[in-house]
Length: 487
Ligand code: GLC
Image (cartoon, rainbow, N blue to C red; front, side):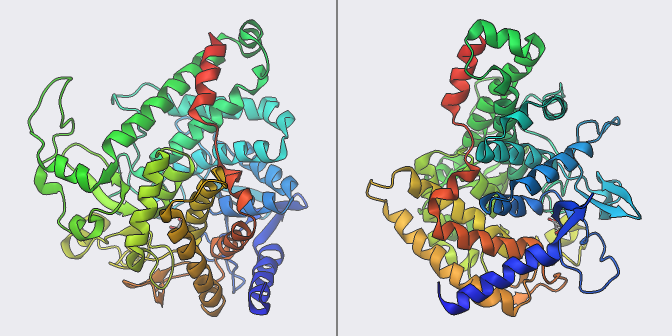
């Protein structure tokens, strides 16, 4: 490691361990969102957010500090809502005020947005923890099993819609302000896919290694029914996402020729989408190079914007096939001047501008075009891309790697150097503004924890690519076999 690199990594580590991690009951319980420079609380940035702690917990697992991760998971579990109508929901964030824990399920948040992703992330993190530490005793405990069932009950409930997607209000995930991301935004759907896989694998643990009869006896009919509904749901969800969200040059051509006003089961254009909704910017953006999952599908109003996190997670959780993942990498290489530029990665593209910005964000000054969630650049997103690429490379280390992998690896290394150089200079800012991400975000916090830990993770995975499987979830074959065993 170069001297300069080692210095930056050391600084990042001490910021995490000495300044960001906080204690509850005398032991570490998670990290605050941003290290406060002044003693007064800074809105909610001094709280422990579940989503901001995902990279923190992954890093702590890699560092062998699994007891902190377990404490964090248990604290969130204790805070899972028991009250109607939020029963089963995990909080967006929590904090201690005068010896009491204050929780936010959305009743305190700016604009009263609710975070659906926190509950899905908790489930995925619980699986990752168990898989990494082999702490099955924890997973089998009554509190964990009943927490999982409560969450599954919340997700798989009857509804008015006949689609395997999860319907949410605007701003229900990392993008937690209005940005026309209501309905079935990509990030929520891929997290749902990951959470279903994780919850089912953990719920079926008690019957592991047993034959059909004993599995049925151990799990009980009620639980088996839920597991079966869950497996069916996740299979349908994947087919649905690949059918409606996956886009490449050829698919655009086909979509442009679709008939409209069709009624009945066997139709081509289920959501009655007019050709004019397909934006012209797709031509230069997509070219004939690769593909990606679009932002949202809704009746008559698809969202063709590109969202980085949903696409990286789509690859990591294997929503997309191996060849689609390569196509996604090709797409990223082609558009690296937009998506990485001076600060990887841009959160979404293109931004909402002019009247669309006014109308859809409600004149939100934080989300001005090319700023914050509306086309801003977030360094905390880059490690997800690193994991998506390296786990593919690790699957067949002997095989000749396709050119996409080799080229994108070069992109990873180049951007790691950029982060290493810029982040300490810019005080580990939360996000960056402008078409290339050169300017520090207008309202960006400094010493933002997931910016700091994001760099530590990139550094770790580039040095130990074999660890990139930490976020890998069970394959569809696992669920197929489980179904057979459940009878
Ligand atoms: C902002 C971000 C959100 C993040 C929170 C704490 O609200 O939009 O994604 O979790 O800050 O960092």
